[in-house]
Image (cartoon, rainbow, N blue to C red):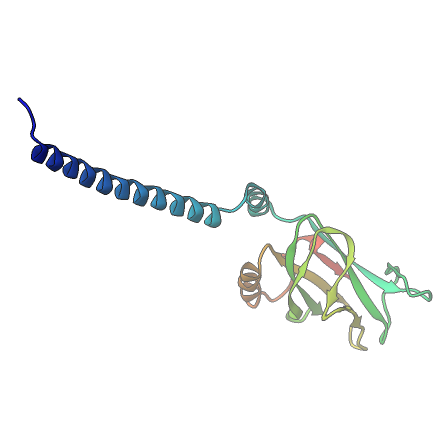
Length: 184
């Protein structure tokens, strides 16, 4: 059974077609594999981001607020007396994770209202609330006999908005945790 030259040429041509088509299929498969790998890499958060997200989504932030006032030297000191009309007070916040907050007050047992909405506070101890690139100060009004200030906090701006909408139904700030509130 001998092959003649014409048969050998036909077999070689057939083998080349098979090799060419299998090469293209292989290259296409490798390309799709690489593209899917790049997409997975780009779309997946890093392990550090996953760890931070897991910690912040499962735990409520530890948060506390204290009223402070500037002394004669311009340093913030804890408020040690009920402030008088015209005095300005600030707020020192301590938190263990980044949070979005709104400062809400209730003067003389009236309905609560937001003094400002949606600022982000990084984690740390004793940070003075900063709003519009300046330390936030509340000026005490003559009718302010009893005022309660509370922070409404959430881990992101959307959740904060949801909490603020829910707070519109409240008549008083009694339901918020004590460490989130300060009053005189």
